[in-house]
Length: 165
Image (spheres, rainbow, N blue to C red):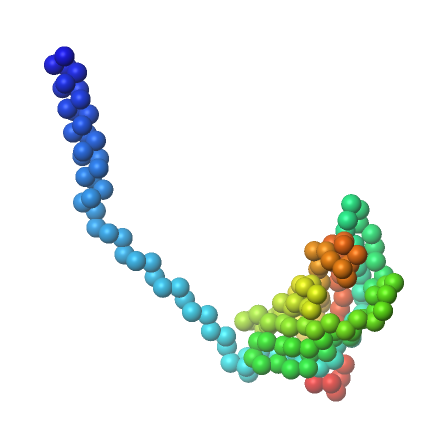
């Protein structure tokens, strides 16, 4: 009986020491405030405004299989730019449907080398500037009315039409 009382006392003492051990540490310093992100001045972003026409278009529908899709020429018009933000529209003909005009909004990355673009029905594109007048574009849709319920991807090269800035 004495042995069990001693064991309980030792165990209780150890538990009390463990609980108190955490109480003697100094509180951690609060986390550093997150860095605020400021965009560079408008002068540091490349001018994207103007009319851009596509070449080398390729597209694919993805459902239970992957099907090649014929992509016609696209015309993308970036009509305004304020710093990193570009606004405009794109024109294209659907393979088995009407001509389409969709609003686009793009944001130039801080290094001025690429744009992330969203269009009116919710497609996402990344445009990589090859030079001031050439941009490689990858556009994706997860599914929807415009893609017949399929996921869709396309690639194309956009070239700025001279005199449209």
